[in-house]
Length: 127
Image (cartoon, rainbow, N blue to C red):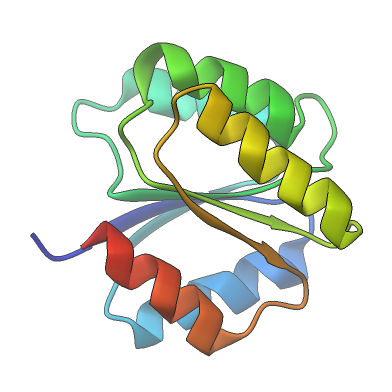
C-alpha cells in the first residue's frame, strides 16, 4: 500500500516545512503537522484512519516525543514511527531503543538536519 498520509510533530516551523517538502517529493499527499505532542494526540484520537507514518521530534513543549511514544503504544503502536532530533546521537539512539522496547513500529531515528535520502530510505520501509 503506498504511503499517502503522514503526521509530523515538531515545534520548529522551519523543520515542519522541510519535512513537508521532503514528503511531497516522495508523493505523500496528506500531511498533518503539529507543534507539540499534545496537539498530535488530540488529532490522532479523532481520526478514523491512522496515518501511514508518524514523524516526531523528541524535544517539544507541552508533551515531548518520549511522552508521545507512551501514548502511541496504547492506540497507535503499529503505525510506523520515525524519530528526528537535533540532540546528541546517544540521545537519539536511546529514544529509538525506548520506542522499540515499548513495542512501537519504529523505522529509525535521524539526527537533524535530516537528509532526504535517509528519510526516503526509512519511508520506503513503511510502504
